[in-house]
Amino acid sequence: MSIFDRIKKIFNNNADDVAKVAGAIGADVAHEVAEVVEEAKQVVAEAAKTAEKKVTKAAKTAEKTVTAAVKTAEKKTTAATKTASKAVQDGTKAAGEKVAKATAPKAAAKPAAAKPAAAKKPAAAKTAAAKPAAEKAPAAAKAPAAKKPAAAKTATAAKAPAAAKAPAAKKPAAKKPAAPKADN
Image (cartoon, rainbow, N blue to C red; front, side, top):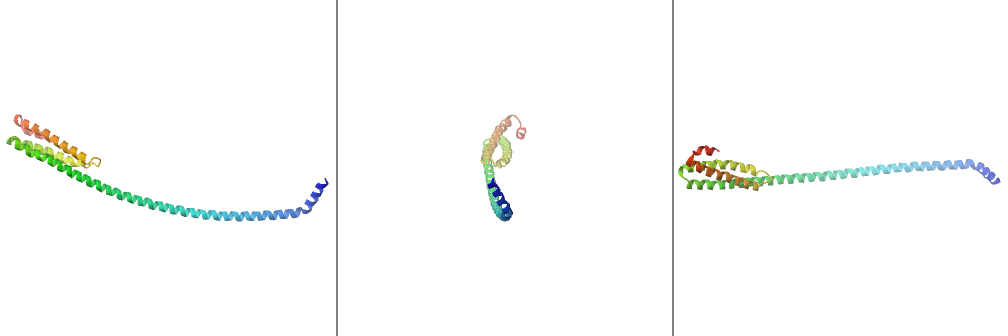
């Protein structure tokens, strides 16, 4: 046990010096830790500022890109609308011309072959039937989904009522008065 006694004596004699050294080391460590924390705060603040600048720049770039894309889309939409409008107008005009051509020769050819009294009344019925059909053709041709096929169908539909009314007008001329049938 003498070894323990000797260690106690040495420790008791040097205890004050050991406590002073340990306190000084602890103070140095605390000071260094405080400096490291301050440096870390500065680095984090600078990194945050840099990141904020990059995010702001990226947002501005994205905004410019989106704005340019929207403008391009608006221009393309406007151009497509103009092109579609022109195509519809051209289709309407062509359909109107086809309806006029289809109804005009029949109206002119059949009255010449018919009797003079019966020829005047069916011709009036044909032109009366052709006019509403011609007016319907441009309205139907304006539908953007079916431009020219709708106009062709309308022209065919315009021919059918004119052809259907022509025989009906010829038959009643001999049996009944033509005026009531022309109203239908």
